[in-house]
Image (tube, rainbow, N blue to C red; front, side, top):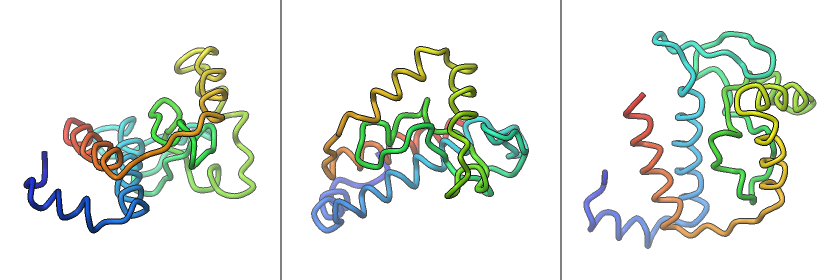
Length: 140
């Protein structure tokens, strides 16, 4: 654990749910942009294949859904250039091909179902997610 229990208790009380969500997403984003990077920090966009530094790309979702069970699902989040991930990028079909090639066709269907599942997170859940991603990042 990265925080003393006293600091954690204070943060859990004073930070809003949206602040914890932002913290968890920040760590999730860093991890998912770096997980496929080479030793120099370069990563390929999962939809167009352009190579960029990990910190110049987005952590793009195959299935959108900020309130769904897919938000922190790592098999659905990969490095994606801003052009492909941005509004009007329209690269979901290519992203689906990437998911199918990397994890299999069943994974595409699984994520399409997961998008429809709503998940309620509490402050503690976001805290645990953030800490988990910090540990994953440290192992990269």
